[in-house]
Image (tube, rainbow, N blue to C red; front, side):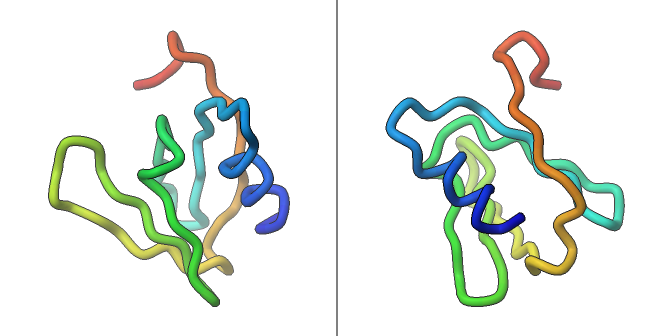
Length: 72
């Protein structure tokens, strides 16, 4: 799943994606610069904020593309 997520984030024609974690959190990746990949975890940077969260790869339950109108 991580390779698929990397492909979605890094593709030239980026489209927003939503990540769901095993713990029930969700993160909307609306720009590729708000997300980074480490060796065993990802880093999500909240837009227009200094906040960030580390997401261990083992905790990523699913990923889906989202349209601009479905961002909540």
